[in-house]
Image: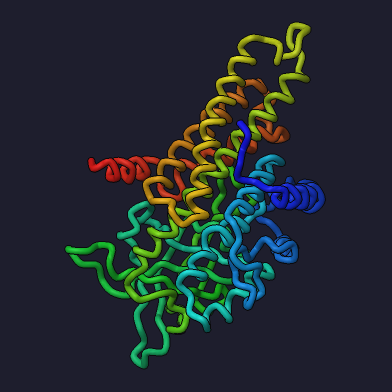
Length: 384
C-alpha cells in the first residue's frame, strides 16, 4: 500500500540519513557490537546533523516543532541497514519530551543547548524488585534540612544508554506511598552522571541490542539541587504515564521497520540461495511464507502510520499506544522468525543481518511495559 505520511522533504531527509548510516555507522557497527557500546563522538556527529534535538525551540539552539515523522525515518533507516543509532532514539524520542514539557525556563536554558549538540539523556525507572509496577519504586530522595537539595539513595537496573549519558532522569520517592494511593510520592529528578555518589554497576550482557548499553546504577547520598526537580514534587507517576504513550509508539514504529527489513533480507537471500538446483525463492512454501509476512506487515504499517498521525496531532491515547505496541511487537516477532527460517542454518549466524534483527526484536515485547501489561491497558479501555 502507498504510504501517505511522507513528503518530498522527508525523501531528502531519508537520503541524508541513509548516506550517514553507510559512511558513519555500518563500517564500524560490528566493532561497536563487540564493545557493547556506541562511541560518544557519534552523538556529536548526530547533533551536527540536527537529529538530537527534535522539537527543541530555536532559542535553545533547536529546530523548533518537528513532526514525529522525522524520527520515524531514522528508525526505518537504521532497521533497513540492521544497525542502531545507539542512545539517539531514547534520548531524543523518549527523555527529551520530559524536559520540553516539564522543564522551566531556567532548566531549559541549562540543559537543552547541550542536548541539541549531542549530550545524551537517559531515564532510570526500573529497580531490582520493580519492573512494570512503577508504584513499587523504593529509591528515595529526601529534602535536606536547609531545603537546597535532595539526598538521593537507591539502585536501578536495566537502564539503557546510561554509559554515554550526561543527564539521567531518576524516578524516586520524595514521600511515602499510602494505602489509598500507592502511585503517589514519586518525583522526577535530573541527575548529572558525574555527581558524587552516582555509580555505574555492571554493564549487563544481553542477547540482543548489544550496542545499546544496559547498566545497573546506584545512588549513595547523591546531592541533587532542588533546581533539578522536573515538574512538581509527587506527580512523577502521572508524568511517566503521559510520556509512555510516545515510548510505546516508538516501539511500534521500530517493530514495523524491522519486520519490513526482515522481509527484504529474506527475499534477497532466497533469490540467491540454491537448493536442489533452484533458488529457494522459487519454491511454493517460500512464496507463501513471504506473502503471509508481507500481508501482516502491511496491516501493521497502516496501524502504525495512523498512530503517527494521531501523535503529531496530540491525540494518541494510552490505549491506542498499547495496541500499537502489542500488535507491532507480536507481528515483528512472528515475521522475523519466519524470515530467519527461510535462511536455514545461515540465519542463525551473526554475520547475517537477520540474526541480529531476531535477537534485537525479542526484548520489544518486554520493555516499555510488557505485552501482558499492554493487554491490561486495552482491557481497561474496553471497560473490562
